[in-house]
Amino acid sequence: MKEIVSTENAPGAIGPYSQAIKTGNLVFCSGQIPIDPKTGEFVSTDVAEQTEQVLINLKAVLEAAGAGLGDVVKTTVFLADMSEFGAMNDVYARHFVENKPARATVQAARLPRDARVEIDCIAVV
Image (tube, rainbow, N blue to C red; front, side, top):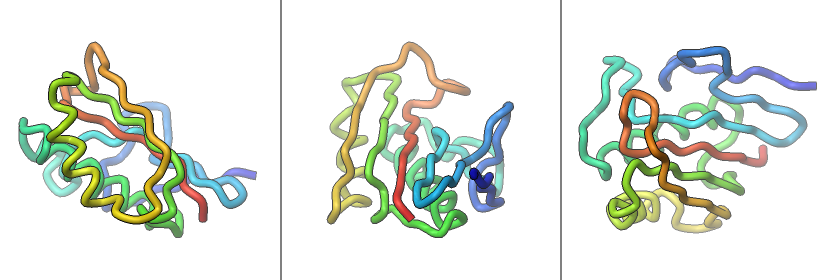
């Protein structure tokens, strides 16, 4: 059985997908980009500031599912430019201090709305 997870505290889905799906004790979060849910606009063009907003958005979706960043077991980070890995990683590390999840990081040819970073995750509830 699967449950659609949705919250107004993160950007709404702009296509035929859900912010997250909860099934059993797992939550599968769709990729988040750096949209401020209050304005519908990117917070910045800076990858560090974008990463901060992406993680705030993921946290909101996870909270709607009854989880938090500490429950994340796997993330995938998509970067528009791998040379920005260090700036992204510094912000990421502040959000995942303990119980660090498994992670893959890849450079994408292009991200939605030309974001610098997108992150998805899987968490345990």
